[in-house]
Length: 104
Image 1 (cartoon, one colour):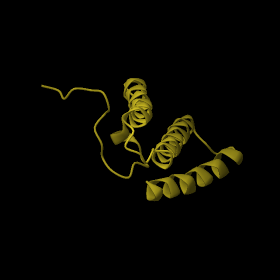
Image 2: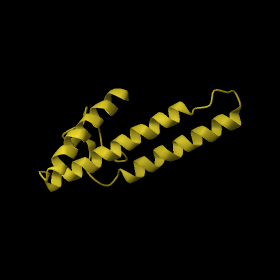
Image 3: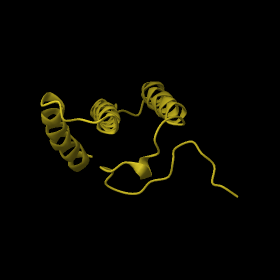
């Protein structure tokens, strides 16, 4: 995660320079929005990892992981719309569209 996050931050800084200079197309602005979204997802994932309880108390563990599950479920629902990850120019890998069934 840290590698992707640092790459995304570097790309964000480069894109902000272009936007600040007024040299950004509509497509670049859409990619910038996608980049900001991915950065926030990585930050949220880090927060979940850092706050994971270290205990054998099932109630505490259950509460934390129910929150994580709810977050992931929301991600899969909202990502049914928009540009698939495999079409982004800055994606580190090719990935399937979340929430979609494979074509038959």
